[in-house]
Length: 478
Picture 1 (cartoon, one colour):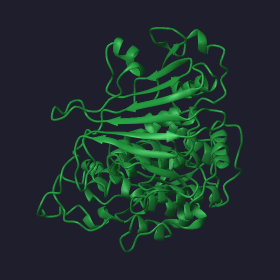
Picture 2 (cartoon, one colour; picture 1 turned 60 degrees about the vertical axis):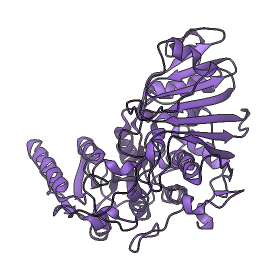
Picture 3 (tube, helix red, strand yellow; picture 1 turned 180 degrees about the vertical axis):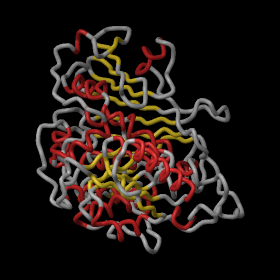
Protein backbone atom coordinates (compact mmCIF):
# COMPACT_ATOMS: atom_id res chain seq x y z
CA UNK A 1 0.00 0.00 0.00
CA UNK A 2 1.50 3.32 -1.02
CA UNK A 3 2.32 5.86 1.67
CA UNK A 4 0.10 8.58 0.22
CA UNK A 5 -3.07 6.46 0.45
CA UNK A 6 -2.80 4.75 3.82
CA UNK A 7 -3.59 7.53 6.25
CA UNK A 8 -6.94 9.19 6.85
CA UNK A 9 -6.76 11.10 10.10
CA UNK A 10 -9.43 11.34 12.75
CA UNK A 11 -9.67 15.05 11.92
CA UNK A 12 -10.36 14.21 8.27
CA UNK A 13 -13.03 11.70 9.30
CA UNK A 14 -14.82 14.27 11.44
CA UNK A 15 -14.62 16.74 8.58
CA UNK A 16 -16.16 14.21 6.21
CA UNK A 17 -18.92 13.58 8.75
CA UNK A 18 -19.73 17.25 9.07
CA UNK A 19 -19.73 17.64 5.31
CA UNK A 20 -22.21 14.80 5.01
CA UNK A 21 -24.44 16.62 7.48
CA UNK A 22 -24.45 19.65 5.23
CA UNK A 23 -22.38 21.94 7.43
CA UNK A 24 -19.55 22.60 4.97
CA UNK A 25 -18.64 22.32 1.32
CA UNK A 26 -15.61 21.03 -0.55
CA UNK A 27 -16.06 23.39 -3.47
CA UNK A 28 -16.78 22.84 -7.14
CA UNK A 29 -15.47 19.76 -8.95
CA UNK A 30 -12.09 20.42 -10.52
CA UNK A 31 -12.64 18.42 -13.71
CA UNK A 32 -15.78 18.89 -15.83
CA UNK A 33 -16.37 18.56 -19.55
CA UNK A 34 -17.59 22.13 -19.67
CA UNK A 35 -21.13 21.47 -20.87
CA UNK A 36 -24.27 22.85 -19.23
CA UNK A 37 -24.75 20.28 -16.46
CA UNK A 38 -28.16 21.67 -15.55
CA UNK A 39 -29.52 20.37 -18.86
CA UNK A 40 -27.56 17.17 -19.48
CA UNK A 41 -25.37 14.74 -17.56
CA UNK A 42 -23.79 12.07 -19.75
CA UNK A 43 -23.61 8.79 -17.85
CA UNK A 44 -21.89 5.45 -18.38
CA UNK A 45 -23.39 2.50 -16.49
CA UNK A 46 -20.98 -0.33 -15.63
CA UNK A 47 -22.90 -3.46 -14.69
CA UNK A 48 -26.56 -3.37 -15.72
CA UNK A 49 -27.90 -6.65 -14.35
CA UNK A 50 -29.21 -7.27 -10.83
CA UNK A 51 -28.81 -4.06 -8.83
CA UNK A 52 -27.23 -2.50 -11.89
CA UNK A 53 -30.57 -2.83 -13.65
CA UNK A 54 -32.27 -0.54 -11.13
CA UNK A 55 -29.22 1.74 -10.82
CA UNK A 56 -29.13 2.41 -14.56
CA UNK A 57 -32.91 2.89 -14.64
CA UNK A 58 -32.61 5.35 -11.76
CA UNK A 59 -29.88 7.25 -13.61
CA UNK A 60 -32.23 7.59 -16.57
CA UNK A 61 -35.13 8.52 -14.29
CA UNK A 62 -33.06 11.31 -12.75
CA UNK A 63 -32.73 12.77 -16.26
CA UNK A 64 -29.28 11.38 -16.89
CA UNK A 65 -28.32 10.94 -20.52
CA UNK A 66 -27.19 7.30 -20.74
CA UNK A 67 -24.42 7.31 -23.34
CA UNK A 68 -22.78 3.96 -22.55
CA UNK A 69 -23.78 0.60 -21.08
CA UNK A 70 -21.30 -2.05 -20.01
CA UNK A 71 -21.88 -5.64 -18.96
CA UNK A 72 -20.01 -8.92 -19.43
CA UNK A 73 -23.28 -10.74 -20.16
CA UNK A 74 -24.42 -10.00 -23.69
CA UNK A 75 -28.03 -10.95 -23.03
CA UNK A 76 -28.20 -8.62 -20.04
CA UNK A 77 -26.54 -5.85 -22.02
CA UNK A 78 -28.91 -6.08 -24.99
CA UNK A 79 -31.97 -6.30 -22.73
CA UNK A 80 -30.94 -3.09 -20.94
CA UNK A 81 -30.12 -1.33 -24.21
CA UNK A 82 -33.58 -2.09 -25.54
CA UNK A 83 -35.21 -0.96 -22.31
CA UNK A 84 -33.38 2.37 -22.29
CA UNK A 85 -33.91 3.11 -25.97
CA UNK A 86 -37.58 2.12 -25.85
CA UNK A 87 -38.14 4.35 -22.82
CA UNK A 88 -36.34 7.25 -24.49
CA UNK A 89 -38.62 6.87 -27.50
CA UNK A 90 -41.72 6.91 -25.30
CA UNK A 91 -40.40 9.97 -23.48
CA UNK A 92 -39.45 11.68 -26.72
CA UNK A 93 -35.86 12.16 -25.61
CA UNK A 94 -33.83 13.14 -28.66
CA UNK A 95 -30.63 11.28 -27.83
CA UNK A 96 -28.45 8.72 -29.57
CA UNK A 97 -28.65 5.10 -28.44
CA UNK A 98 -26.05 4.24 -25.77
CA UNK A 99 -22.86 2.58 -26.95
CA UNK A 100 -22.34 -0.91 -25.53
CA UNK A 101 -19.25 -2.52 -24.05
CA UNK A 102 -18.29 -5.79 -22.37
CA UNK A 103 -15.04 -4.39 -20.92
CA UNK A 104 -15.17 -1.26 -18.76
CA UNK A 105 -11.51 -0.57 -19.55
CA UNK A 106 -12.40 -0.16 -23.22
CA UNK A 107 -15.35 2.00 -22.25
CA UNK A 108 -13.02 4.45 -20.51
CA UNK A 109 -10.53 4.35 -23.40
CA UNK A 110 -13.20 5.22 -25.96
CA UNK A 111 -15.67 7.36 -23.98
CA UNK A 112 -13.54 9.23 -21.45
CA UNK A 113 -14.13 12.63 -23.05
CA UNK A 114 -17.82 11.97 -23.63
CA UNK A 115 -18.98 11.10 -20.09
CA UNK A 116 -19.50 13.13 -16.95
CA UNK A 117 -20.54 10.44 -14.50
CA UNK A 118 -20.36 6.69 -13.96
CA UNK A 119 -22.41 4.12 -12.07
CA UNK A 120 -20.59 0.98 -10.90
CA UNK A 121 -22.86 -1.98 -10.11
CA UNK A 122 -20.61 -4.98 -10.75
CA UNK A 123 -19.79 -7.81 -8.34
CA UNK A 124 -17.67 -6.59 -5.41
CA UNK A 125 -14.30 -7.66 -6.80
CA UNK A 126 -14.52 -5.13 -9.67
CA UNK A 127 -15.75 -2.17 -7.60
CA UNK A 128 -12.31 -0.86 -6.64
CA UNK A 129 -10.71 -0.90 -10.08
CA UNK A 130 -13.73 0.52 -11.94
CA UNK A 131 -14.33 3.21 -9.31
CA UNK A 132 -10.67 4.26 -9.21
CA UNK A 133 -10.57 4.45 -13.01
CA UNK A 134 -13.57 6.76 -13.01
CA UNK A 135 -12.19 8.97 -10.25
CA UNK A 136 -8.76 9.29 -11.87
CA UNK A 137 -10.53 10.64 -14.95
CA UNK A 138 -12.41 13.23 -12.90
CA UNK A 139 -15.83 11.59 -13.25
CA UNK A 140 -18.63 11.76 -10.73
CA UNK A 141 -19.23 8.24 -9.44
CA UNK A 142 -22.06 6.24 -7.89
CA UNK A 143 -20.85 2.81 -6.71
CA UNK A 144 -22.90 0.08 -5.12
CA UNK A 145 -22.12 -1.14 -1.62
CA UNK A 146 -19.71 -2.31 -0.46
CA UNK A 147 -17.78 0.51 -2.05
CA UNK A 148 -14.69 -1.68 -2.49
CA UNK A 149 -13.50 -5.18 -1.59
CA UNK A 150 -10.24 -4.50 0.30
CA UNK A 151 -8.83 -2.09 2.87
CA UNK A 152 -6.22 -0.92 0.37
CA UNK A 153 -8.92 -0.10 -2.18
CA UNK A 154 -10.81 1.90 0.45
CA UNK A 155 -7.71 4.00 1.12
CA UNK A 156 -7.03 4.59 -2.56
CA UNK A 157 -10.64 5.60 -3.32
CA UNK A 158 -10.75 7.82 -0.22
CA UNK A 159 -7.59 9.63 -1.31
CA UNK A 160 -8.76 10.00 -4.92
CA UNK A 161 -12.11 11.54 -4.07
CA UNK A 162 -10.42 14.02 -1.77
CA UNK A 163 -8.11 15.00 -4.62
CA UNK A 164 -10.65 15.15 -7.44
CA UNK A 165 -13.52 16.78 -5.56
CA UNK A 166 -16.24 15.15 -7.66
CA UNK A 167 -19.74 14.17 -6.55
CA UNK A 168 -19.89 10.61 -5.22
CA UNK A 169 -22.39 8.33 -3.54
CA UNK A 170 -22.27 4.75 -2.30
CA UNK A 171 -25.43 2.76 -2.93
CA UNK A 172 -26.58 2.16 0.63
CA UNK A 173 -30.05 3.58 0.18
CA UNK A 174 -30.92 3.68 3.88
CA UNK A 175 -28.70 6.76 4.12
CA UNK A 176 -31.60 8.75 2.69
CA UNK A 177 -34.12 7.55 5.27
CA UNK A 178 -35.40 10.25 7.60
CA UNK A 179 -35.56 7.65 10.39
CA UNK A 180 -31.85 6.87 10.10
CA UNK A 181 -30.90 10.53 10.18
CA UNK A 182 -33.20 11.15 13.13
CA UNK A 183 -31.67 8.24 15.06
CA UNK A 184 -28.23 9.79 14.57
CA UNK A 185 -29.53 13.09 15.95
CA UNK A 186 -31.21 11.43 18.94
CA UNK A 187 -28.12 9.43 19.92
CA UNK A 188 -25.79 12.39 19.49
CA UNK A 189 -28.33 14.48 21.42
CA UNK A 190 -27.51 12.38 24.49
CA UNK A 191 -30.93 10.77 24.96
CA UNK A 192 -29.46 7.34 25.82
CA UNK A 193 -26.33 8.75 27.42
CA UNK A 194 -22.86 7.68 26.45
CA UNK A 195 -22.90 4.57 24.21
CA UNK A 196 -21.29 1.43 25.63
CA UNK A 197 -22.20 -1.47 23.32
CA UNK A 198 -23.35 -2.04 19.77
CA UNK A 199 -24.99 -5.24 18.49
CA UNK A 200 -25.89 -5.71 14.80
CA UNK A 201 -27.24 -8.93 13.30
CA UNK A 202 -28.32 -10.05 9.84
CA UNK A 203 -30.40 -12.84 8.31
CA UNK A 204 -27.89 -13.13 5.47
CA UNK A 205 -26.51 -15.02 3.66
CA UNK A 206 -29.40 -15.84 1.36
CA UNK A 207 -26.91 -17.08 -1.24
CA UNK A 208 -24.66 -20.17 -1.09
CA UNK A 209 -21.60 -19.97 1.13
CA UNK A 210 -19.98 -22.30 3.58
CA UNK A 211 -19.18 -24.51 0.59
CA UNK A 212 -16.11 -25.79 -1.25
CA UNK A 213 -15.17 -25.21 -4.87
CA UNK A 214 -16.78 -27.77 -7.16
CA UNK A 215 -14.54 -29.88 -9.35
CA UNK A 216 -14.37 -29.67 -13.11
CA UNK A 217 -15.72 -27.02 -15.45
CA UNK A 218 -18.71 -26.36 -17.66
CA UNK A 219 -18.99 -24.84 -21.13
CA UNK A 220 -18.97 -21.04 -20.99
CA UNK A 221 -22.27 -19.62 -22.32
CA UNK A 222 -21.87 -17.85 -25.64
CA UNK A 223 -23.25 -14.61 -24.21
CA UNK A 224 -20.83 -14.50 -21.22
CA UNK A 225 -17.33 -13.00 -21.38
CA UNK A 226 -16.02 -15.16 -18.53
CA UNK A 227 -12.51 -13.70 -18.57
CA UNK A 228 -13.96 -10.21 -18.17
CA UNK A 229 -16.32 -11.39 -15.45
CA UNK A 230 -13.28 -12.59 -13.49
CA UNK A 231 -11.71 -9.17 -13.97
CA UNK A 232 -8.90 -8.57 -11.45
CA UNK A 233 -9.47 -11.95 -9.73
CA UNK A 234 -7.43 -15.08 -10.40
CA UNK A 235 -8.42 -17.33 -13.27
CA UNK A 236 -10.67 -20.27 -12.46
CA UNK A 237 -12.90 -22.58 -14.50
CA UNK A 238 -16.47 -21.59 -15.22
CA UNK A 239 -19.10 -23.62 -13.34
CA UNK A 240 -22.74 -23.10 -14.18
CA UNK A 241 -24.74 -21.51 -11.34
CA UNK A 242 -21.78 -21.32 -8.96
CA UNK A 243 -20.43 -17.78 -9.47
CA UNK A 244 -22.13 -15.88 -12.28
CA UNK A 245 -25.52 -14.56 -11.23
CA UNK A 246 -26.09 -13.79 -7.58
CA UNK A 247 -23.97 -16.59 -6.08
CA UNK A 248 -20.63 -14.79 -6.15
CA UNK A 249 -21.23 -12.99 -2.84
CA UNK A 250 -20.08 -15.87 -0.65
CA UNK A 251 -16.71 -16.41 -2.36
CA UNK A 252 -13.55 -14.76 -1.00
CA UNK A 253 -12.32 -13.89 -4.51
CA UNK A 254 -15.51 -12.15 -5.60
CA UNK A 255 -17.65 -11.05 -2.65
CA UNK A 256 -17.47 -9.97 0.98
CA UNK A 257 -19.98 -12.35 2.55
CA UNK A 258 -22.91 -11.31 4.70
CA UNK A 259 -20.83 -8.73 6.57
CA UNK A 260 -19.64 -6.86 3.50
CA UNK A 261 -23.03 -7.09 1.82
CA UNK A 262 -25.29 -5.95 4.64
CA UNK A 263 -23.24 -3.99 7.18
CA UNK A 264 -23.01 -1.00 4.82
CA UNK A 265 -26.75 -0.79 5.50
CA UNK A 266 -27.16 -1.96 9.10
CA UNK A 267 -24.01 -0.39 10.58
CA UNK A 268 -24.50 2.86 8.70
CA UNK A 269 -26.56 4.60 11.40
CA UNK A 270 -24.46 3.64 14.44
CA UNK A 271 -21.19 4.27 12.59
CA UNK A 272 -22.23 7.88 12.18
CA UNK A 273 -24.01 8.32 15.51
CA UNK A 274 -21.24 6.76 17.61
CA UNK A 275 -18.34 8.41 15.76
CA UNK A 276 -16.68 5.03 15.52
CA UNK A 277 -13.54 5.85 13.55
CA UNK A 278 -10.88 3.13 13.42
CA UNK A 279 -11.16 0.10 15.73
CA UNK A 280 -8.22 -0.74 17.98
CA UNK A 281 -8.91 -4.48 17.76
CA UNK A 282 -10.96 -6.95 15.73
CA UNK A 283 -11.52 -10.65 16.43
CA UNK A 284 -13.64 -13.38 14.92
CA UNK A 285 -15.01 -15.04 18.04
CA UNK A 286 -16.83 -17.98 16.45
CA UNK A 287 -18.02 -19.43 13.15
CA UNK A 288 -20.39 -22.24 12.25
CA UNK A 289 -18.00 -23.82 9.74
CA UNK A 290 -14.73 -23.29 7.93
CA UNK A 291 -13.97 -23.50 4.22
CA UNK A 292 -10.96 -22.59 2.10
CA UNK A 293 -12.65 -20.24 -0.37
CA UNK A 294 -16.01 -19.16 1.05
CA UNK A 295 -17.32 -17.33 4.07
CA UNK A 296 -19.00 -19.46 6.77
CA UNK A 297 -22.76 -19.82 7.11
CA UNK A 298 -22.73 -17.95 10.43
CA UNK A 299 -20.19 -15.90 12.36
CA UNK A 300 -19.75 -13.64 15.38
CA UNK A 301 -17.14 -10.89 15.12
CA UNK A 302 -16.08 -8.36 17.78
CA UNK A 303 -14.75 -4.86 17.08
CA UNK A 304 -13.23 -2.75 19.87
CA UNK A 305 -13.21 1.03 19.58
CA UNK A 306 -11.15 3.31 21.83
CA UNK A 307 -12.23 6.56 23.50
CA UNK A 308 -13.16 9.18 20.93
CA UNK A 309 -14.54 12.72 21.09
CA UNK A 310 -15.47 12.40 24.76
CA UNK A 311 -17.14 9.00 24.27
CA UNK A 312 -16.06 5.94 26.25
CA UNK A 313 -14.54 2.79 24.72
CA UNK A 314 -17.15 0.69 22.94
CA UNK A 315 -17.47 -2.92 21.82
CA UNK A 316 -19.39 -3.82 18.69
CA UNK A 317 -20.54 -7.36 17.91
CA UNK A 318 -21.60 -8.47 14.43
CA UNK A 319 -23.70 -11.62 13.98
CA UNK A 320 -24.85 -13.22 10.73
CA UNK A 321 -26.58 -16.38 9.55
CA UNK A 322 -29.83 -17.31 7.84
CA UNK A 323 -32.46 -18.58 10.32
CA UNK A 324 -34.13 -20.39 7.45
CA UNK A 325 -31.17 -22.73 7.05
CA UNK A 326 -31.91 -25.55 9.52
CA UNK A 327 -28.44 -27.11 9.19
CA UNK A 328 -27.07 -24.82 11.92
CA UNK A 329 -28.13 -22.29 14.56
CA UNK A 330 -27.13 -18.75 13.59
CA UNK A 331 -25.28 -16.61 16.11
CA UNK A 332 -27.36 -13.86 17.69
CA UNK A 333 -27.04 -11.43 20.66
CA UNK A 334 -28.30 -12.81 23.94
CA UNK A 335 -28.79 -11.78 27.56
CA UNK A 336 -29.74 -8.49 29.19
CA UNK A 337 -28.88 -6.35 26.18
CA UNK A 338 -31.75 -7.77 24.13
CA UNK A 339 -34.16 -8.76 26.93
CA UNK A 340 -36.78 -6.13 26.09
CA UNK A 341 -36.63 -7.00 22.37
CA UNK A 342 -37.11 -10.68 23.13
CA UNK A 343 -40.02 -9.81 25.44
CA UNK A 344 -41.64 -7.91 22.55
CA UNK A 345 -41.86 -11.14 20.58
CA UNK A 346 -38.31 -12.18 19.81
CA UNK A 347 -35.42 -10.91 17.75
CA UNK A 348 -36.27 -10.01 14.15
CA UNK A 349 -34.16 -11.51 11.39
CA UNK A 350 -32.02 -8.38 11.22
CA UNK A 351 -31.49 -5.56 13.67
CA UNK A 352 -29.28 -2.94 15.25
CA UNK A 353 -29.10 -2.23 18.99
CA UNK A 354 -27.18 0.61 20.66
CA UNK A 355 -26.82 0.24 24.44
CA UNK A 356 -26.14 3.48 26.32
CA UNK A 357 -25.72 4.52 29.93
CA UNK A 358 -29.29 5.85 30.12
CA UNK A 359 -31.18 3.80 27.57
CA UNK A 360 -31.18 1.87 24.32
CA UNK A 361 -32.05 2.46 20.67
CA UNK A 362 -33.19 -0.44 18.52
CA UNK A 363 -33.76 -0.52 14.75
CA UNK A 364 -35.52 -3.65 13.46
CA UNK A 365 -34.75 -3.38 9.76
CA UNK A 366 -31.81 -3.38 7.38
CA UNK A 367 -31.94 0.28 6.41
CA UNK A 368 -32.50 2.09 9.70
CA UNK A 369 -35.79 3.56 8.49
CA UNK A 370 -37.45 2.82 11.84
CA UNK A 371 -36.03 3.05 15.33
CA UNK A 372 -37.39 2.51 18.82
CA UNK A 373 -36.26 4.08 22.06
CA UNK A 374 -36.09 2.77 25.59
CA UNK A 375 -35.16 5.60 27.97
CA UNK A 376 -34.28 5.48 31.65
CA UNK A 377 -36.02 2.69 33.56
CA UNK A 378 -38.68 2.05 30.88
CA UNK A 379 -39.51 -1.61 30.27
CA UNK A 380 -40.80 -1.32 26.72
CA UNK A 381 -39.55 0.31 23.54
CA UNK A 382 -41.54 3.17 22.03
CA UNK A 383 -41.42 4.69 18.56
CA UNK A 384 -38.33 6.90 18.59
CA UNK A 385 -39.87 9.54 16.35
CA UNK A 386 -42.57 10.33 18.92
CA UNK A 387 -40.84 9.50 22.20
CA UNK A 388 -41.05 12.31 24.76
CA UNK A 389 -37.34 11.99 25.58
CA UNK A 390 -36.40 12.73 21.96
CA UNK A 391 -38.73 15.64 21.25
CA UNK A 392 -36.30 18.27 22.49
CA UNK A 393 -33.50 17.08 20.20
CA UNK A 394 -33.11 19.52 17.33
CA UNK A 395 -32.93 18.50 13.69
CA UNK A 396 -29.34 19.07 12.55
CA UNK A 397 -29.06 16.83 9.48
CA UNK A 398 -30.81 17.91 6.28
CA UNK A 399 -33.46 15.48 5.04
CA UNK A 400 -33.03 13.79 1.69
CA UNK A 401 -34.80 14.32 -1.64
CA UNK A 402 -33.93 10.68 -2.38
CA UNK A 403 -30.69 8.71 -2.26
CA UNK A 404 -29.92 8.79 -5.98
CA UNK A 405 -31.43 12.26 -6.35
CA UNK A 406 -28.85 13.59 -3.87
CA UNK A 407 -26.06 12.48 -6.18
CA UNK A 408 -27.61 14.09 -9.24
CA UNK A 409 -28.28 17.31 -7.35
CA UNK A 410 -24.65 17.37 -6.19
CA UNK A 411 -23.47 17.01 -9.80
CA UNK A 412 -25.77 19.73 -11.11
CA UNK A 413 -25.10 22.15 -8.23
CA UNK A 414 -21.34 21.46 -7.96
CA UNK A 415 -21.75 20.50 -4.29
CA UNK A 416 -19.82 17.21 -3.95
CA UNK A 417 -20.29 17.07 -0.19
CA UNK A 418 -24.08 16.94 -0.47
CA UNK A 419 -24.62 13.15 -0.76
CA UNK A 420 -24.90 11.75 2.77
CA UNK A 421 -22.99 8.64 1.72
CA UNK A 422 -20.32 10.40 -0.33
CA UNK A 423 -17.09 8.45 -0.71
CA UNK A 424 -15.36 10.55 1.95
CA UNK A 425 -17.49 8.83 4.58
CA UNK A 426 -18.41 5.69 2.62
CA UNK A 427 -14.78 4.66 2.14
CA UNK A 428 -14.26 4.98 5.91
CA UNK A 429 -17.38 2.97 6.75
CA UNK A 430 -16.55 0.29 4.19
CA UNK A 431 -12.97 -0.05 5.40
CA UNK A 432 -14.06 -0.66 8.98
CA UNK A 433 -16.58 -3.27 7.85
CA UNK A 434 -13.99 -5.01 5.69
CA UNK A 435 -11.75 -5.36 8.75
CA UNK A 436 -14.35 -7.81 10.02
CA UNK A 437 -13.85 -9.86 6.86
CA UNK A 438 -10.09 -9.70 7.47
CA UNK A 439 -10.53 -10.97 11.03
CA UNK A 440 -12.84 -13.75 9.89
CA UNK A 441 -10.34 -14.96 7.30
CA UNK A 442 -7.44 -14.54 9.74
CA UNK A 443 -9.00 -17.16 11.99
CA UNK A 444 -11.25 -17.79 14.99
CA UNK A 445 -9.81 -16.49 18.27
CA UNK A 446 -6.90 -14.70 16.57
CA UNK A 447 -7.27 -11.12 17.76
CA UNK A 448 -5.90 -8.39 15.49
CA UNK A 449 -4.53 -5.29 17.21
CA UNK A 450 -5.10 -2.64 14.58
CA UNK A 451 -3.14 0.52 13.75
CA UNK A 452 -5.79 2.51 11.89
CA UNK A 453 -3.72 5.42 10.52
CA UNK A 454 -1.05 3.02 9.23
CA UNK A 455 -3.64 0.47 8.03
CA UNK A 456 -1.80 -2.52 9.41
CA UNK A 457 -1.94 -4.99 12.28
CA UNK A 458 0.44 -4.49 15.19
CA UNK A 459 0.62 -8.17 16.14
CA UNK A 460 0.32 -10.10 12.87
CA UNK A 461 0.89 -9.82 9.14
CA UNK A 462 -2.52 -9.66 7.49
CA UNK A 463 -1.41 -7.65 4.45
CA UNK A 464 -2.45 -10.52 2.16
CA UNK A 465 -6.00 -9.95 3.45
CA UNK A 466 -6.03 -6.13 3.44
CA UNK A 467 -4.49 -5.93 -0.06
CA UNK A 468 -4.97 -8.09 -3.13
CA UNK A 469 -2.96 -9.30 -6.10
CA UNK A 470 -4.48 -7.98 -9.31
CA UNK A 471 -4.47 -10.11 -12.41
CA UNK A 472 -2.43 -8.73 -15.29
CA UNK A 473 -4.31 -5.98 -17.07
CA UNK A 474 -5.95 -4.62 -13.90
CA UNK A 475 -4.71 -2.26 -11.18
CA UNK A 476 -5.78 0.68 -9.03
CA UNK A 477 -3.52 2.98 -11.04
CA UNK A 478 -5.13 2.60 -14.46
